[in-house]
Length: 103
Image (tube, rainbow, N blue to C red):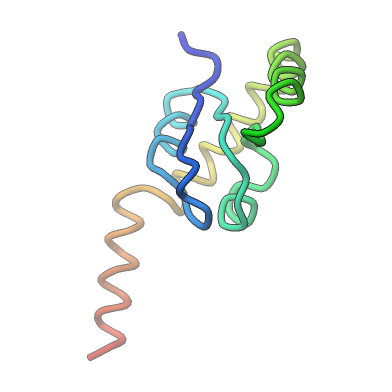
């Protein structure tokens, strides 16, 4: 029933936390801090926020919640990306492929 998952991993400046993938997979819109990796893989699908500007984030969050169709569309698009490239099975395949290349 959660509409938005707040990911507050400020130390992760160039990667992603599994909460982001789990949140979208569970049908939540995910709000998180922006970094180059997330922008590359998920584009503008998450709600990005700056911890130093709570008012701006509050406005972004309120606007997102006012548009359930847009919210659902963002979640579904993120789910497609995650299922295609960011499951544990995907990760395992990449690890195996990398190890095989190193032989």
